[in-house]
Length: 231
Length: 56
Length: 247
Image 1 (cartoon, one colour):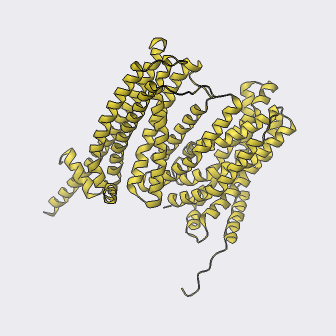
Image 2 (cartoon, rainbow over the protein chains, first blue to last red):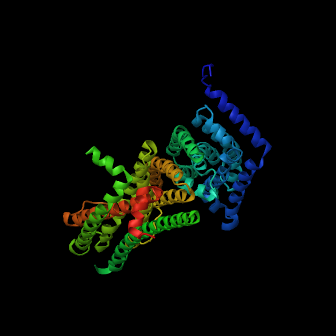
Image 3 (cartoon, each protein chain N blue to C red):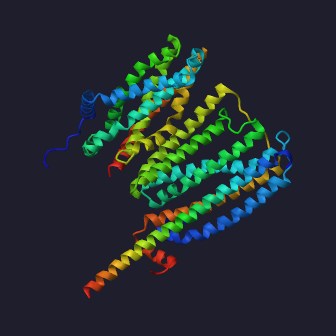
């Protein structure tokens, strides 16, 4: 080997990986659409179970929307590394000279674009249907944006730990749900406060702070977990 | 103990029972592990013996 | 001193040395718990506000304290195992988890029994400590479930160590968020105050006693874990033959 070892640029690899993941997702739209339908169905279940009283629905609407978002994010998580694990490209990714945390972050961000973002875009419909006004919709969007991103990042750790295990989806929920509680608490509570007309800045600060923390720490944990799972 | 006797005794006995269960579980796990390794060892030994017999 | 620790970290040494500590900790722990519980239930004066119901504190607080303590032991030793690749540290983490889960369960149940006469309800969703303990139990369950799901022990050690560390980062955040959640909702339900020395003393005895008992069970379980990890080594075979008897 006489050629000097070239340091790969961080950007080149990760953007190619993200482009590939996006293209793959377009060819298999089920992975994106199924969690969305799941989200809508959970939101429809509660009025069916509790009765159509609009005042009651308005009171529980923020919480239900958030729980539905959490569950459908969880449902989608399983597919984050699974395809790449099965066809062996995950192993290639780990062996490649590209920094694994950056690659894991890239994959997680694409996953969020495909599951979290559509969910955010659909959420106003749910909020409106529960009889809440536009101001609440704005707050819901403002909390779901950092919230779903945090959930994707947290979930990527769980998905990396359980990839390759048998019957991993129930285990994945068991691992991720307790970790996701702060996001749920602050997300749902902030929207409830907005419904009551209270100050919501504390919740938004927390959610963005948590999101930044997850953005800086989670990729490293995910990378470590991927290495361990693929030994 | 007065009116709260029932609450106090039930919580104390539950706390002790949980510690006892944890201890018993630990002992049983250790025994099972010992027995498991012992079984594997004797299986290995039998295999060795039979190969020796065949050789002789 | 260092040599002692180095020796302790070697599995066969630990395995042979541990029983003495298990016995010592166990006996002293039981004596302290017996003394502390007797003093707490019969000698300590009843509380000004809660009357006799406060006596549940003598089993509730040690359990709650140990549930936190077990998680920190688990997370710290998981970190040590991950960074310095020490097998014994992974054994400690694996041994601490079920014990921590048991003590968390005990804290929740005794807390519920305490809540019944004090708050008028078994379960108070609005209390931040109840919620923290519940989430703690979920974290333990997740950790144990991940361990059970991975067959290969080395991989289970490392994967669960990552989970334990992620959980350790999250615990203060969880704690803070449930506190915020309840502060919006309602104030604290139990009024804390200074305790009289004759009330505090049995509590300290019980905390110390339960901690020693926990230490004894922890060491005992670490022995089992060591046995499992070293089951192919020569010394374990010799040890097993000695205990089970030659086949």
